[in-house]
Image 1 (tube, helix red, strand yellow):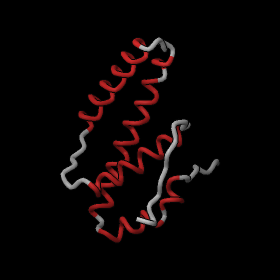
Image 2 (tube, one colour):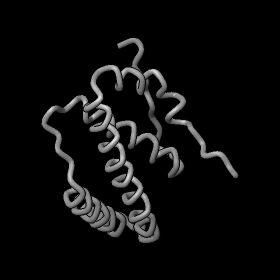
Image 3 (spheres, one colour):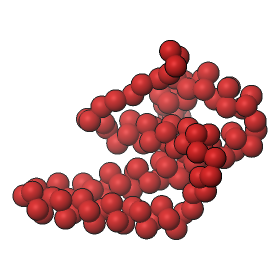
Image 4 (cartoon, one colour):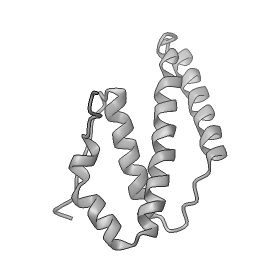
Amino acid sequence: VSESRVVHSHNYKLSSYYRRVRMEAVADMFIFDNLCPSLSNNVKSCIKAVWLDVKWCLRHGHPLAMLYSPLLRGTQYLAMCRGNRKGLRLKAGGPEAFQDFSENLGDWSSKKRAKK
């Protein structure tokens, strides 16, 4: 689709990574009709991902890198949970709700909290 948004990088800050994963999780709720996310499955998947990262880091001689894994994976799975919830709410609102969301995606994905 010519209007599609493409986001690609290997050097995300955690805040940018969070926004990207959350956007993908919202979209997943519309793409996959049978997707039924659960907190327990996300927690299990997060623990498994950290464990696989630790094994990879030890096998490839990067022991300090494994300290970052819980932070990265925690951010990833938190964003997935929140994005899935947002996607479910938008899906319940019908096509108009998703259209509003997708039209304002640039604003939503880069929104910063105002300092008070």
